[in-house]
Image (cartoon, rainbow, N blue to C red):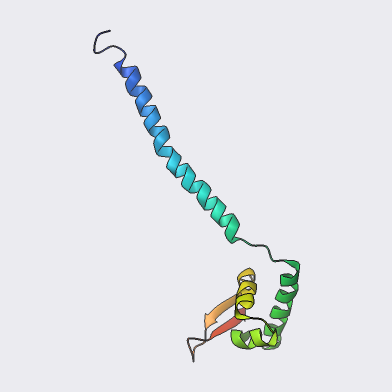
Length: 110
């Protein structure tokens, strides 16, 4: 075999292998993003749904906004449990800093 023969085929094969190797990490990143999105989206449990309705009702009774600390105390929830409940309610309840004391949070109905 002379030096020029078959070289084009080898070059094409190498380019194809290189392209497939370059695509693999991109595919893996896309799969990882999809897996993370599924993990981040949590469906509320039945008790959380009931608590969510109570939370919305409390805020609605108080004119559509209320300090998070006051709501948490009325619902008799620990900070961690209340935080979990708020995470499942982010579609219907907005959290903002209180304009007087930035450390306090205000819950608003969307």
